[in-house]
Image 1 (cartoon, rainbow, N blue to C red):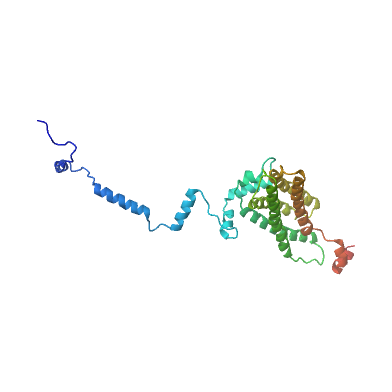
Image 2: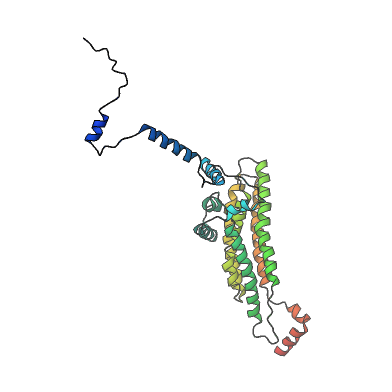
Length: 299
């Protein structure tokens, strides 16, 4: 006779105890213990006492690929422009001193990541280099003259700082505003941000630091040769960088912008050389009685 017992009915295995007694090294798993462990893990994942809620917000922003926008008048806005590696600054300085035809400084070296660390220290170094070199050059020119007493001219630092930082900030501001206006007038023009333009102008001044050091030597031909070399290097970096931004514009606009870039660069170099490294004027010697007596005694 066939058995009427349901084969799918749950049955308790009475021989479980016998199996455990036969194999003492057997491992048993409790379903209730696993459920309890999984519940504890879920609770630990949802809350951690050491977790910083502000840090979780930053992590979520990084994972989502979005950056928190901050106002430009806050310190956090400019902090990211000083976060740059040393080898990147070195690479940009070398690129500004050795321009290569066809290489755009912004596209090759900045790569949409401008910095203010390099331009700030380049401008600061150039300011002190001009002031110190001007004092040393004045001392060497008047060295050996009777009744000459050296007095350091500290006002040269202030004048040099005003000239250099005005050029490095006001000129890019005017150029950025003009390019922005032309971009609204004419479509399909390459646009640069204000920080990118400031970065280009800051690094373009790095070639003037060794040139200013050479101006200590009291030789006019050496000074003018260094000025010409520095102007060619710095001007070529600026022209090749801003050429893509104006090449599709009206020819008169192209000539005006590029001429203004070159002329302002020339005025800065020649103005610094004329003011800080000029030879004593003969007219001032005739007005000064001490120098007049020195001139008579020498003759």
